[in-house]
Image (cartoon, rainbow, N blue to C red; front, side, top):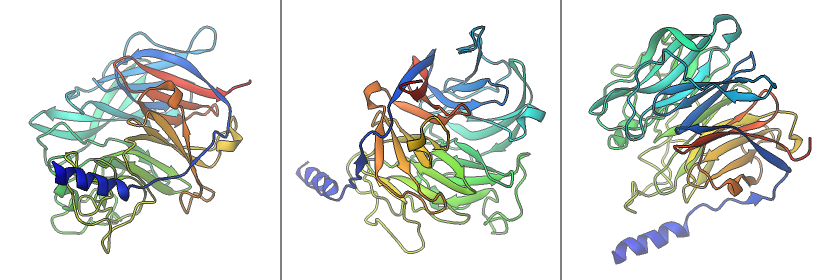
Length: 375
């Protein structure tokens, strides 16, 4: 025990401390919907409606009410595929097709299978009113894993219309994040129909999964594309949460390198860097547990324009990360926001209305809209 405490003290000695800005904008937080069971992802549709996933496997619609204000439909969307909901598994991301106004297509990522043999799956479906039709899986991770942890599940469209999908390491299979025969601990890139782009970095590598885009990820739960550049963050264990710029074929280190330690305070690795492995743009130690990720370029908060926003479960906050040049990454002190809510924040989104939208993570989760303090 003494050695563990000594190591923990040493770990804290090199823990990364990041400067924080004072509050740059006055805001108020409006409650849009309540009573959601662990809401996980929020998406905006071009017709003014919104979609929200609940981790147990429900997809919900928020639409303008008689007074024009958004309200939650009482019944879930019908036709959602069967979802494995146990532990950290469940229904994760909902992502509209870039051409949704024409094809009404959405993607869902979720846990599929049985607890002892499960996968991360992506299904495409058409939204007709309050029902999904023509549902068809376009990706199922391989091989099956045996624990219901570290699924990842976030998705984002690249400029060429291909899809980025992050998957966690499964926790117990962490070393597979460095192996190319499995999707564990990787970002994948596929086309909208599930086929593999010919220019993926490992498409011609013997024994490699051709969908793999980047390797060495622990549990990515945020990804966003800004001016053609993909940014993602991922959970560490006790520390070592990271923000990275994704590049095809790059290795982001886990578990060979990390800035954190295991939950037992044991060292995961003696290395914080190694040749050929990407260093994070930002590291959060102690852990903040980053969840959703968005880019803000709206008009309601001029001081927030040109920033990434990171939802943080453990810290019960949202961090604003300024980026003067989206091509180069973070460029200033972070700002800590919304801790006064006292709630775990699962997702953060920049809405088409210029507001910032939040999902709180609880059995009675809320959809929140952040607007300027004075109209």
